Amino acid sequence: MAAVEALLDERPYLDRGRVGSWGWSGGVQMTLNAMFRYPDVYHVGIAVAFVSDQRLYDTIYQERYIGLPADNEEGYRLGFPITHAAGLEGDLLIIHGTGDDNVHYQSTEQLVDKFIELNKTFELMIYPDRSHSIDEKENTKRHLHGLMTDFLHEKLPPNTNFAPQP
Image (cartoon, rainbow, N blue to C red):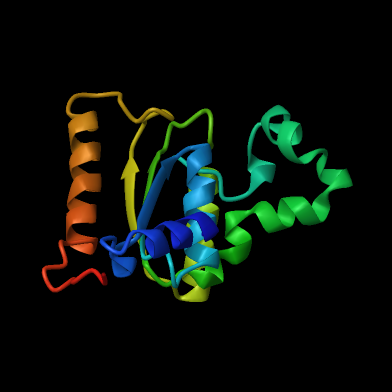
């Protein structure tokens, strides 16, 4: 967030009202945390095949960065995007394959459940029987990338009224 704000301050031709982020897999944790914790900065996000709660993911990957859950319960809790889901204010598209054997589909279900509990609006696209790469079956990649492109065009259209400050 600090880097994005510094960049926006440094480059007046960038539009503060049109900041978005997207990620796939581990990169989505950053997108979700950014959107949930800094909704005044991040307005649009796309989350593909993501981890909403590190306890649902490969322990050796998580433990390498934040230690054992028993030794760092607060670090794990604060790192979970789902912990901060109440902060969602922008437009979010969630995408996941039901056959993902790397980041289990359960992660999406838990975040969706949390959004329902919090009465948050979001968009969801499920790809049946697709893995973590969401590339199985005819036309899948084209559909996926078209979906993401259309979402960004709809939610972050060109601002023809934007006039950068000198």
